[in-house]
Length: 409
Image (cartoon, rainbow, N blue to C red; front, side, top):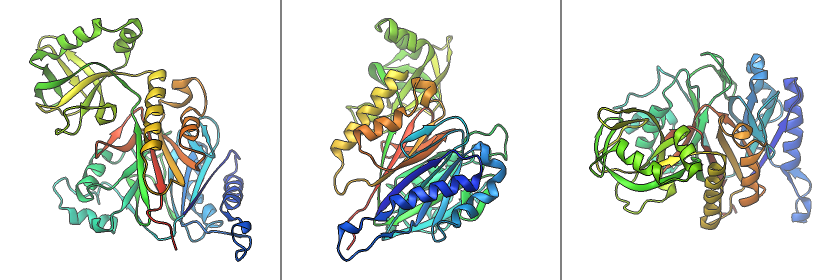
């Protein structure tokens, strides 16, 4: 298995694709010194991922053909983005194309497209999802997913795939950069779709690890939901939710109080069997309003009595610390063969606008995990798992790290 990542800023699409292809082929070259029996050669990529800024949207139908001219045997997969990530950099402004290539021996690729008409119903049996994807769960696939936010319910998509393929890693994001329906583009082989979602199931000699950094830190105590009405949090440990929030607020320092006033969230423990929750066990959701008459809070998620929750806040420092701790935990905890390539699906609300500097998340990734080829884009929503269940997030950086299960013969 071998990965490579490249980026170009040429205004002409053909020039950008040509520059990326040359860079990728140089990275994919086999070192002849590795074996006296092998001369200088290149490995052909099986998968090519392309993310284009909106500057190229008028040339959307030429993206696949431009890539196929360089990589005729590869599955092509990608979308438009408000910014793109590649070759160790985050391009948030101006014309940019990111292309990531992967040579995947022993890996089966099953690409698919789904739109509002072909989307299985919420009560569809797993077999319907298996037919949509073209693989069965006994092959232990992982998924890359890209969706248009205007035309498809991405939460329903990941929920259905979780139901049909439990335990499979699912990572991706929602296309970004457009202001109106029909302006985003999803690339899949020779097609340029203006709606729906595209995906690839990867099965065989591949492991997909995930790191989902939600960028928050907890405040106050972990408490149990004792009354809830759908997305309304009524009481915590028998006390009105607003009263608990007020009690938490007065315990914070000045900086914490400032954050609680402008960036307050609720972390919801997703595993009901865990009594001692840690940062990675929480699904972080917005607090959308308050009902002072009931002493209740409106939350951007359905709640259930008995769930463990904790208030959270977010800022640049907190986001950086959260990402750093998760990447360090990944580096120390990974078992088996090391990752050889990675993808990053980062929120448009991160990047320079959050940190005040370019390449923050990619730089931290390379510092802590290593100089892996890393491609991706800035999303309108990020797809990734928390506590074993896949969710659609905001303000996150969702990483997929790819490695072989076993060393090929």
